Image (cartoon, rainbow, N blue to C red; front, side, top):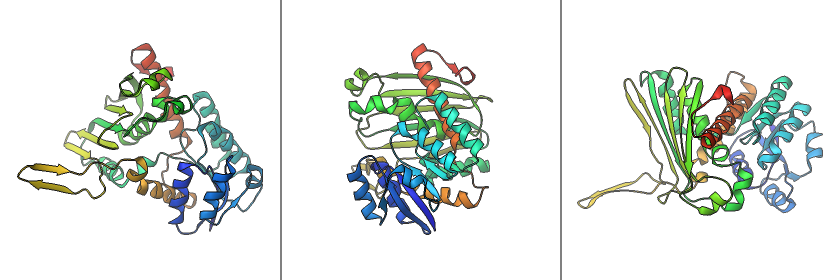
Length: 331
């Protein structure tokens, strides 16, 4: 039975706690959060105790720390896991500062602890199957990848300064997806963006609509499109084009029901929120992480993937500011 300390009792902490309820041989022993009320409410649902960080890190019975707290706490908590020699699963990103993230990743590698990063989309069954077919060569030589990711509605403007901006907060998932699916070193990026959705986001210093074009060492291209608004629901699609055809993952609705009559064909709207769209991915993500603690051959996104995705986000910001493509080697 793995004994877990969950740090963070907010929305994503609740998602992970719910996922762990459905996983055998895993028990949440502690919940830690700066907001005691949130911690107690979540702990009571999972028969866990509310403690402080010092108590949790001094307990030899804790096997794994799950970091679901705010981004500005991630690097410090990861360093504490290194010092305590404890396995850790951490939500992305490692940090909003690339230099700090690199230093943290180096410390993790030196310590030898198992560290998983929360790029949950890799574990979505549809995307995972697309990845398998690419790896099997079903598409022939991959040439172009198109990733579409649009949120149903923009976040409140007061979230923007804390988020690190669209490239670090939102598109970072798509950067990881591109790296995973392309399976080749990305050497160049061109990014552009606008404020088309919410003027308050622009006033907060960010963009709400963006595209990025990535180029690999052999010339493969990935085109990523992001928007903070999608009136028809949570838009999550991938298209892969290769020498022998095309692979597509389309949007997911609650039942995937299609109604056809003499007036036309009507599809259900896509699921509205990421918690609905990726509920299975969150559970499979943790199952795979826990399995990787026993089987070191299991490939799970780690600190190096976190740094690589953040480097792409930094390059995208630099490209936006300069209005030109950026070589990753220059970031």
